Image (cartoon, rainbow, N blue to C red; front, side, top):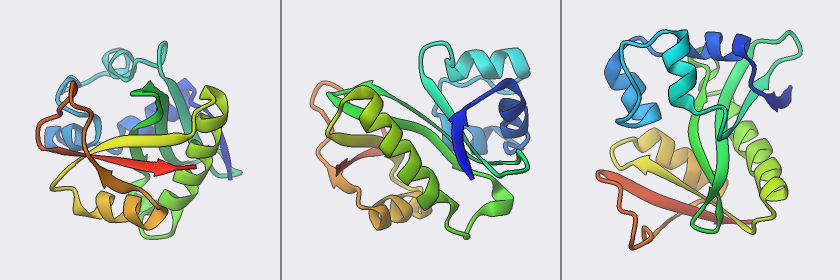
Length: 153
């Protein structure tokens, strides 16, 4: 397995994981267009502004996807998702480990942060298991129906 910068082939695989608007919104948030097509999906991912990474198998299968950028003085993780066929096999932990390592180093940050919908219990559990804790949301940025989580390096 390797964490690489996401390419168009990865994005095409990623698009197939979202079968309906609620699935897409839970992953990407409310500002992602649905229905989507390749051009709108890539534009909404903001791959030109946000570092987008693919965790891929040796055969090139997309196992997981995630993004990172600087926000609130932390390496902010966004749009984390594991291939539906790989869930429950520890891939989320591998993605978090690789993405945090790369993001912290790339951004010269000391902590990672992320938002997650407060009813996405499986994601919250995975983040807590990895070492994230629920943290007070930055005062100037409240995201409705979300919790903010932080992990120190």
